Amino acid sequence: MKQIVGYMLIICCIPLLYLISKEICNEIATAQAHEQQIEQAIVLPEIKVQLPITLKDENGKIYSEEYVEWRQPTPLSNIPEMAKNLFLYSEDEEFFNHIGFDLSAIARAFVVNTSEQSVQQGGSTITQQLVRMRYLSEEKTYERKLMELFYSYELEKLYDKETILEMYLNEIYFSNQVYGIGGAATYYFNKPLAELTLAEMAFISAIPNNPSLYDPLKNFDNTKARQERLLDTLAEKGIITAAEATIQKQTPVILDVKEKVQLYPAYSTYVLQELKWLVAHNEGLDVALEQAESEEAKAAIQTKIQAKLQELLQSGIVIHTALDPNKQTHDEQAINSILTKPDLQASAVVIDNATREIKSMYGGKNYEKFDLHRAFQAPRQPGSAFKPLMVYAPYFETTTYSPTSIVSGGAYCIGNFCPKNYGGGVYGNVAISTAFKYSYNTSAVRLLNTVGIDTAFSYIDRFNFQSITEKDHTYASALGGLTYGVTALEMADAYTSFIDGSYIQAHAIRKVTDLQGNKIYSWPTERDLIWSTKTVKYMRSILSDVVSSGTGVGLYTNTGYIGAKTGTTNEFKDFWLAGLTDTETAAVWIGYDTPRSMEALERNQMHFSIFNAITN
Image 1 (spheres, one colour):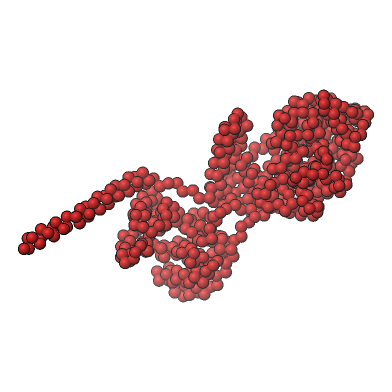
Image 2 (cartoon, helix red, strand yellow):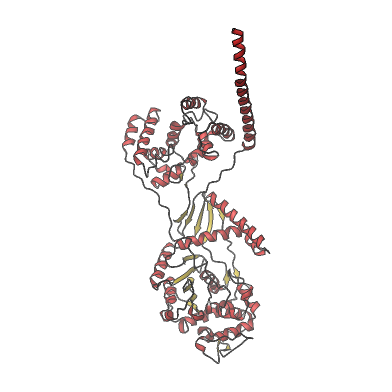
């Protein structure tokens, strides 16, 4: 009878044994799959985080920051021992002894979790936490936990303990998009980690254990309670005395939360665009873009530029600029006070004559960061303000004539193109200086015809006009009649050639450095000689005449020299002023975003008021 029962039990167990063997096979297959996966992925992927981008003015002071996550990478040598101890004794006391994971801690966690429906307790070492932050999800499953162990073991083979601890302390999350203990110090207390008191260090060290529960901005009392437990732990371990712990627990914790610096949006918006140009130039991609023959090739190069820019931004950089914060503030306030007409807009740029650096920019009334920037993104017809560059300077450069030479101001046609002087005036023979200061259109076209369109544009092409095309190679260009137009930045930039005949593109960026201060990029400093000494002398003379007795009467300067040229487009849709003093070169545009007549505003001469305000 016993044998029969035994056989029956054996027969009944066969399906069970089959199921067990099947599960064992599945586990072996899973293990082999994991092994293959680990062998392929054991070279831990490169981790990229975007570090803050900081913009500094001419005095080295921060005026703008760009970041989604606030980080301040800090070498382990600069992290106080007390800060290290706070994490070592609260998170992983055996850190320097284990191989990446702690079997006793895992066993304790397993015992607890066997009574639960899902994994609840971790038993994770600092290395495991780092692996989880870098490479894995926060999902609490045994499969993910197994991968975590393999990765942790591999990480310990790749790096020494000090490096792992440094990575950990720089990557742990401190709530409110703050990562790393250095970032937490500057964010919550607005000072470097090394300057924190022990009470403050313990306070921020309380956050990562549960960033939501211990968010000091929402749950200050929770954070303070854990801070006190951490201080007690240090006392228990003999790092500090019980008396010291009591003193630190009683020390008030006063937060000084960092506010994102976002000053001078018109200037900083431009700087970030110039950064893209700077990267393209230094990588030789700007030349490649110019030489690209198809739209597909141009798109591919633009993709390369953007990829290089993103790589740079992720590394964390400091952009040192020429911004004069006092002047930027003054110019913005002055222009805003002048633009009292609803919807009337303006753009303006001021360049330092000595350095050829952009000192201030006005992108539009009530400008907000990344809005349409009228100073460099909104080309408009320049009218007669284009004549000095397109006609008169090339004329003096290519002939032996002078401002006293004679030109006709009478009616003139080239083919079907018959320009008219302002008000329909018809003039006889006049000095070139007279034709210039009163802005006779027929005289300008006559002079351009003498120079030749191609010759004139050979000079224009040496500047940085981005919107001028082959379609603009017509006689209408003598009067600023262009397909798309120019910007205030481009005009001020080109007018700097009348300082001394030399030209280098004006820039806002002085240099770009990494977070350690090493220079990554800067602009070339060599200048191109555009105009001869003779041409510069003649141009400065006739530009000065415009102010003293021509269309620019009303402009003034506190320096010894001022020269300028006005510009008004058809139907009074744009008013321009471009010129220079002994110290600065500037260009001003006013108009409506949707062009319409400003004839009623002509007598107000608001562009004159703006020019005077920003150059004095």
